[in-house]
Amino acid sequence: MIEVENLSKLYRLGQEDVHALREVSFRLDAGEFAAIMGPSGSGKSTLMNLLGCLDQPSSGTYRLDNIDIQDLSANRLAEVRNRRIGFVFQNFNLLPRASALENVELPLLYGRVSGSQGRAREALDRVGLKDRSRHKPTELSGGERQRVAIARAIVNNPAILLADEPTGNLDSATGQEIMEIFRGLNAQGVLVLLVTHEAEIAEYARRVISMRDGRIESDYLREAVPC
Image (cartoon, rainbow, N blue to C red; front, side, top):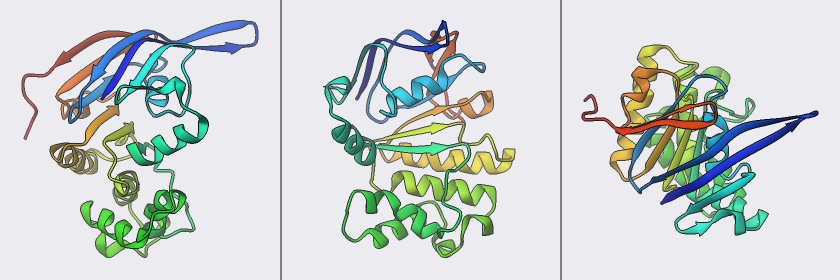
């Protein structure tokens, strides 16, 4: 489903070239659960942005469902992001004045999808927040806000879910609850790829990709995933 080959990203800062990503290559198949680990500055978030079609590589290729992403127009990229990929961020990125239901409904409104409110309610139900749909983010706990963010990410039934430090702002118990949601979504066939610096969070993934200095340092399958 995801295939990258010699993917690189170069930023120009003043007179200096910064290599955020250096010739990264790997493949992720449908239904995988993978974690990207590495210290700050290792290239994790840069890679996630490229895979999410939020940025373009400086060189190399990225194929999504055998389609070369670099060949797509801006409008087509936006459509891919909206329909094929769900995003979950550390800081939730919810609209503070909108209800949980309205936040979840946003991708459907952008895509002009009919029956958006009903689908948003179903997504909230999937993450256990059916009874909190009218609450605004300030009226929700951190774990509940992240559940709203996950519901928003899955409301379009994406094949791919990208999560950047999804438990970073949560206590350990709440983080485990969020990871169980990801595990359940993966069991339903969603490809889950998360960025984390926490070893205990990466243990939920079947596959772990470790990065350092913009390169893949190791890529391995774990023998067992905790129940």
